[in-house]
Length: 181
View: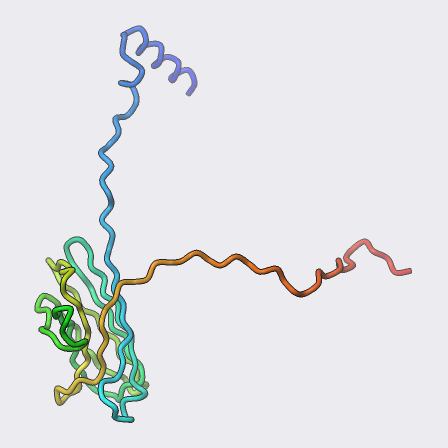
């Protein structure tokens, strides 16, 4: 291996090729497109006590060209439900808005255990920074059951410095090689 390296270097020097021309050319460094992640916790709509057990989470991931949403619910009565991702002006209410038509939703059906999961995907979707996005779950009769407004994922903060322990240091334990006296 060393011989090949020495020979190629000698040939390059003899041919009069500059040393920088032998190395690989650097590619243009473009910033990598990052996915925009929005999350929400769904809360019951209305003050009815029957809705108190219902809860859920949703994640909306928006890439350069497409988007996907995941909906996870718990405490739902068994049955079929509909859900939609809404887009509205920032000044509008949390769950008021027009459905985003580019999303194709999978069926949302709650099992007898109360768990319901679904996904939605969209092609050619771009994030409008002036609009706010929300997700709403509707019952079979069309009434809103759960609602949540998407917000950006929070950045990780610095971990606090470890405080010194108040416990005294432990004495070393006897191990192999120690004999009793």
